[in-house]
Length: 273
Image 1: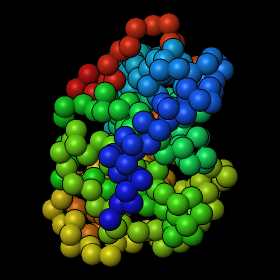
Image 2: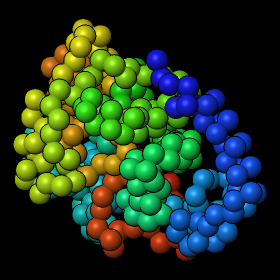
Image 3: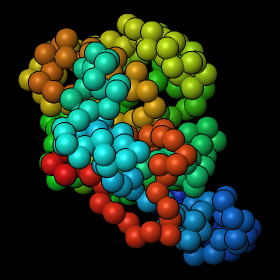
């Protein structure tokens, strides 16, 4: 059972207390330090939060990593990026609509590393705004944490994101079947080559038959190399899952690919665009 404080109702009550505390103890926006008054998102002013824009332009049809130039798909609309062409991938496709850059990067850091779970609803809303109509699944599966890390953090950020979007997708969450069995070094601390080997056999299923024939949507906070979700997908496919897709809040990209906040929002590219 999801703890009460991590449920949508519990976070709504926390929001009421947060608004009251702002009146008694004024605080500033995490990014610009502008005083927060009736701003709906915890720790961020309206203007800074509005600067979070979806990625735009040509992208890999499988992992949706943005291409630096439209030339990449001018003569081959189905052209995949280097990683998708050269790595053994088990997931079918990836949706990660936002760049892992400020102010979203700041929000994820507060949420994930400083236990600001009141941000879960706002981060989930960002995902809901960009979920394409063609994205469908039978079950949502948050990427699990090892018990040691879960005890230290006291919550799984991917589970909170999944809880925030399940009503929009109208799909159940399976948060206990896929488990992390190895307490490996954090991916962020490793070079790219080591990340791909770090997670081998790090995940397992308690009841493999539960996923047979199912379309699974893995939920994570940040898509970097894809090594974590790829290993999860491998385990799920070995249990006869029909297909595994990935939905992450943000992705690591080059600084030059971050959308300009001065431009109007553009719909995130789909597989058919």
